[in-house]
Image (cartoon, rainbow, N blue to C red):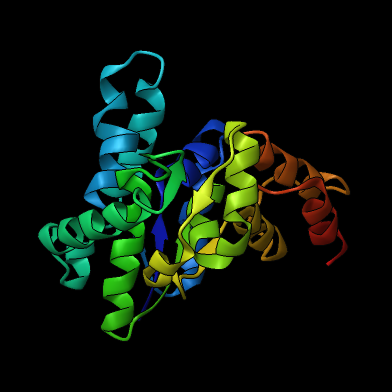
Length: 224
C-alpha cells in the first residue's frame, strides 16, 4: 500500500485551474490511497463552503470525497486524534524555530502540518507516502533548512534567525507540487489538452495559481 497526501493549496490550485478531474485519473493510475486530513478538509471545504466566492470550489472538492477519490486517514486505520496530537507537536517546533528580534514567527499552518503528521504516522507503519504541497516554507523545513534564514529574511525584510537544531523532526519527508503532478498526468496521457504547448500551459497555470516553482524548473520539466 502507498499513499498520496493532499495539502489544501494543491487542491485549490487544481480547482482554480479546472483540473480536479485529473486527480481522479491520477488516482486510477496510482495504485494507492489519496488522503485528505480533517484539517485540510476544513480549509478547502468546511470553511469556504459558507463563502459565496469560494462555494463552488469547495463543492467540487467535496465531490471527490463523495466519490471516494479522496479518503480520510481513517481508511488506513489512523484516527484524527493521532494526527491532531502530532500536528500540534510539529507546529510548536516549527513556530518556535524562527525569530525576528526576540519574537517567534509563525511560519506554518495547521493544514499543511497535519499532512506532515499523517506522513510521519504512515512512515512509522512502513507505508510509502508523499505529500502534495505547493507552499515553499514547509518544504524548506525538510528539504533545505540551510536556506531558511536567507529566504525568511528576504520575505520579511528583517534579519531572521533560524534555529536549525530544532528542525530534525522535519527531515525525510517527501513532497510533490501541483506542477509535478500535472507533469506526471501529461506524460501518462491523462490530460484532455493536447498539442505542442499543452505541457507548458499546464505548468504555467499551476505556477500562477500558487505552486512554488521557478521558470527554470518549468523549462527543465519541458526538456524531460
